[in-house]
View: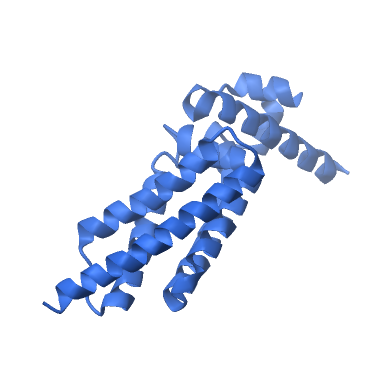
Length: 199
């Protein structure tokens, strides 16, 4: 029974914490407001979490882990089957839309927390995947700066769609069309780079 009560308190704090972090960001988030919103005492908070950062991690870490596993599989799939890029973008966007609030917190409200530079981590992950993809297509190392910019564009594109004030159906439409555009551009770019390699 006591475990049930503790689990309930943890869930209340996570719900209230997510709302507070979304509204005010990590740095300006108030433990007092979180506790008031959750209907628990500060003592109950510290019995459940050792700090504001521990609560922040408890809310975001499971989704971050899930996202990274999914991203790894999708990027690997793209290298093995270059025609799957649009589908990969749609799967990623569906995940981000299902967890939009958490994504917004990480991208816009994580200053001062352990996830402060998380977008750079995702960018780096994408950069490695892009480099592997272009390497597999060209048979040599691609230009590092080009790869870095391409990875940044892809991530910023996903965030721009997420920020758009349109319904889910429209976001998925935008994801598909931009993915088709990117695929066509990638094919042309690879043709161009292959010509450079064989000069």
